[in-house]
Amino acid sequence: MDLKDLYRDVIVDHNKHPRNFGVLSPADAHADGHNPLCGDQLSITVKLDGDKIVDVKFEGHGCAISVASASLMTEAVRGKTKHDFTTLHNKVHELLTEHDSAIDPISLGKLGALSGVREFPARVKCASLCWRTLEAALNQTVTHSDQPISTE
Ligand code: FES
Image (cartoon, rainbow, N blue to C red):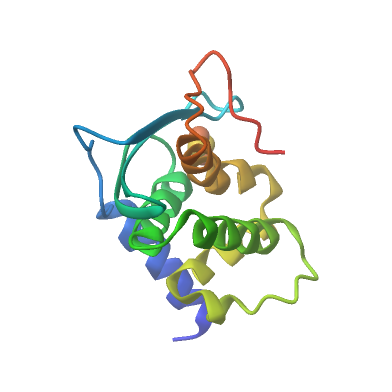
């Protein structure tokens, strides 16, 4: 099995069996995200201990890539600080958008599976929706569906 097949299997698995799907109640932070291109929506709730993401869940509806990205993201950021999240978000954004990125997808573990998305520019917004939404939650900026999160 080559890396492309492995990454495809990771996306399929996390879409079929999304991790951390649901709502945290009470939550310390929350944001709603919306992909204006398709109308799909995502809601993210977070429990924080100071600067640390203790728990994070997502719910909503979206395509396979958006669900898989959210599932992978929630696994990757649990236990991380807000600063760690920002660093990881920047790397994933580069992986999604820059063909000549120097970032080795393997260095990002399962998140490396998102590297295939850059071959499909129209799907970048699908993969980045959850990241932008968690960023908004951590900034305590609640974004409503009539105020779409820009994923530019
Ligand atoms: Fe809607 Fe991907 S098509 S989030």
